Length: 325
Image 1 (cartoon, one colour):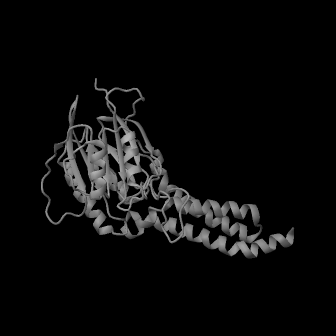
Image 2: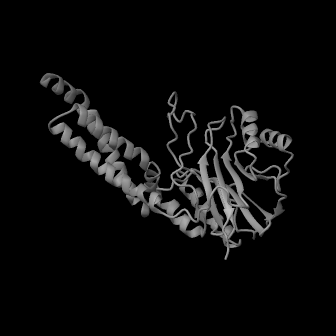
Image 3: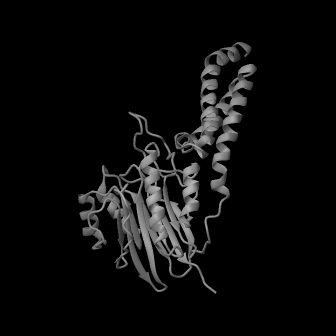
């Protein structure tokens, strides 16, 4: 048994120590994201640093003894604390008012990056139709996908050929927003709808990756300027933000928007597609698709949809009007 432990320490000790060190270093460096967008990229991957630290600690605890064990446990502990502290605010923040399933006036919303390389668009559209949503906000739509969606539903959006599309069984109305200076930094769609309580705006977005920090921050700035022109009480915002809740950037802009993000740590990417040649994660690893709503809406539920033909999972949110005294 002693010889087996020695062999395991020689074979497993160095790689486990290296992985634990990488997770610890990355998680600690990610805290510099409060000052640097480049370091904030590491914060988006906080769950990976956390999981790596936990796995290293468990494997070392089961198979190793002596100095190797304690070194790995120490490094894993640093990674666990550093990554955990990045993620903790997401689990302690408010997600706004809530309402029971039977609350009147419910609005069912699907947010979905359908992917411009959707492997089965017919199945995707059939699933959307089967959900009987009131509003559908889609990103990375292609002309073929849009025509298929319209043929299956009969819906005609305010913009027929935008990359971000807002479909609805409710009649859409144009939602004018002031023109902003400079070139458009990325796809954004906006429209208004009417219900029994009046009008409410809906905005859909698709952001650049956080590695394109300058473009993403321009999109955040532009979106904040658009929201400043809208009544926020019943506003709804959804899209593929390519930004996770544990990043400092996401937290800052969440506070700036004046809306309440209704999803909580909802992992939506990737949906079974390879992120590296011949490597397919068994579960989604990034929470980058989000749904926001003003305080005039209560959350009934927010759930991840099934794996379809996209590299994202859909997000299905049900909102209901907040009862006013």
